[in-house]
Length: 421
Image (spheres, rainbow, N blue to C red):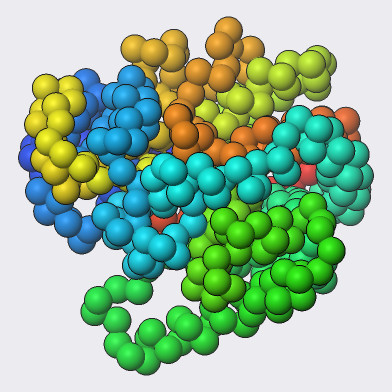
């Protein structure tokens, strides 16, 4: 397994450094399903950190690959817009009209007003109140894992923990919690393509609707009910996010919170296990001194970079890194590259659990769109690894991971592992 991975990595490096820069297309999903994106971004950071790709299945786009340039774009919403009417936040253009977007695909003041509705859920007090429940559920999940047998870590640990947490946040039917990561994965498979047949579109809709219908029933049941602290009640009671009660009007925010609540934690839990496979001494050090999780958790998030990119659209001509970006251009911030920028992060290609500045990363974004649930994600990661470290001397990866078919979320569909008896 290790020899095959080394050969694949060598081949990717040879191709990345022999391909002319004008032919670079770093958004090619195959880079992410094979985990071979690294040398392509490395070369761009060194030779062309603000790079223009003139043609792709998404259209032309700029790649912003260095840490400080990413921060500059993410901090300037006046020039670099998230608005869905201009294209939204993914390299593929958004399909919903601006008025019905989730708040992540809006600019101020609409963005700020809608984000404030759900922010109290993710406060320090809210996190402290949730931690005992997360810990008890993590413990129950881990205690049921088979020892000495091969199983899928993504399914039994990462998905199960995050789906339970999401069901709690939404007060969603607990026995249907596995719908939530399925919704996220389908959403990340991309918008309907122009070349899809009517039958393909109908199949996609038929698969998606049974998963999302419970949200509509929950919304209708709670919108006129007593105040409550679950996310659906908060969204449905506030006039800013209630809008006119059309599913098209409110569903964008539900989808955003489903995807965001599922993917950062879910893929970082799995990504941590992959890192410990390559750096077993890090796992041993954490078992000896669990206090190191304070710095290890943000290092896990940086290392995994579960959100690979965010897109903006230029609202005017602007110079960045010596290049002139034109009004209307698609600008892609590659967080996955910024988090390996050695000019800012020392030894960025190494997994170091006791970094001096572990939160110096862009995995949660920057500026007004910084992930609203970042503290919840870190707390879940800390708790689940505290509980794993208590129980297991080693969890071995025993097969190749199956990675998510996405250039937006860098994650895992499956990972075969075995707990050492």
